[in-house]
Amino acid sequence: MGAATASREDEEAKKMEAGGDTVGQKLDAGALFVLQSKGSWLHCGYHLTTSIVAPPLLSLPFAFAALGWAAGIICLVIGAAVTFYSYNLLSRVLEHHAQHGRRQLRFRDMATDILGPGWGRYYVGPIQFAVCFGAVVASTLLAGQSMKAIYLIANPGGTIKLYVFVVIFGVFMMILAQLPSFHSLRHVNLISLLLCLAYSFCAVAGCIYLGTSDKAPPKDYTIAGDSQNRVFGVFNAIAVIATTYGNGIIPEIQATVAAPVTGKVFKGLCLCYTVVVTTFFSVAISGYWAFGNQAQGTLLSNFMVDGKAVIPEQLLLVTQLFTLLQLSAVAVVYLQPTNEVLEGLFSDPKQGQYAARNVVPRLVSRTLAVAFATTIAAMVPFFGDMNALIGAFGFLPLDFAVPAVFYNCTFKPSKKGVVFWLNTTIAVVFSALAVIASVAAVRQIALDANTYKLFANV
Image 1 (cartoon, rainbow, N blue to C red):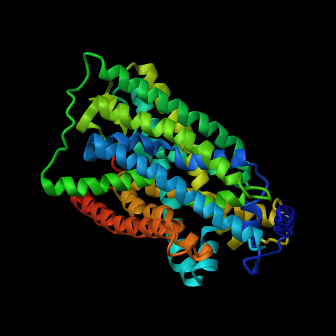
Image 2: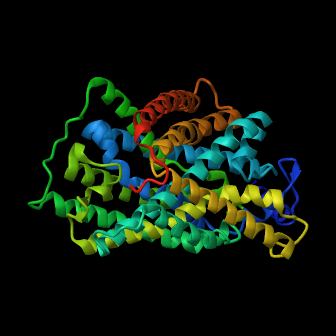
Image 3: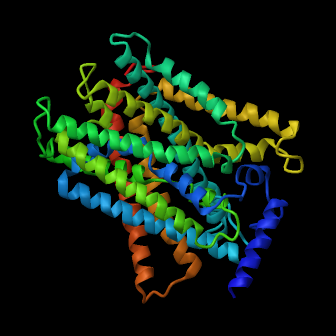
């Protein structure tokens, strides 16, 4: 039985290489060129880690400030457990279809095949695209802010505006975006894994240094605000944690794994979540311990007061530099779904990946996509509020609810069993949380609207 399964997967891999039939259709150029299936489980682990363990984890102390110690740790544990479980469900569904000669390469392929074409075209596809492109914009903005912070540490009183740094990073991204396939990012993402560990440990060191020094702010762990603001703050915090654990590209990552795929993504997830637990919990707990309810939107902001570093400047510089470098990897990973769509639109699968007919449209389309993301990041530096909405509307259903639905529809577990009701509970609870968190995010945008200014220098 095992040999037959492996044989089917090998045949499917050969069909994919040749542009054969997948989900009833010939592979387009996007699937054939961007989602090449050549990677190992280690490469999968690198991709997963870069897509999940990213600088938004530095916002976890801010989420704790709205939740408190007990609720914060509980939400962090639940987020880790549910996302690991959900991502493994997605992987098992993908493996099941691959074993039956229908290897699905994209999230929208899964939705189309399992729920129907309308779900893939009008729900999962657009939400995934918004989430991933939003992550590119957010990464570009955060990178610009890191560059500006490094500049101000080196040159206090400097007058260069934030949008200049955003544009500089955008130009660098235009070059990095030309890496042809998701698989070609494997070495970049290995470095990214090391960088996320490095800046997390630096951030923890900064918190311990400041928390035990004479400069330590007063530690107040009460939840600030009136009852209404506290309630909305809780749902905003849940959206922040969901966005931090969010991925949105599990099928595309699994598509990069060489056949047979069985068990490889699970190994990659184990590697990834070892890094997740190490970084998320250490940063969240040390940051909230050091700053209490004064924790800002990103922990790095707490390390600067009135434009001056309150931890050793060299430590802050190194932390900002590691963060900046990893953001380039995060941005190019989340650009892959856009690249895949553009490749499918403008490239010819019958010609070689490096034929002039395909290289020129690739160069132009990817450059324009990065230019568009850079323009949004420079124009709307308060994108964090909007990204919270994208996280609530996108990551919560896509990463928490949809996998449980896919699993139940594919494997049809007994309604008398634990698995069916566990999956149903996850889907219902997190769908409801997505709606409530979206309302909270819209409310926060409305409250902050009077502070919005295009090309603001924040």
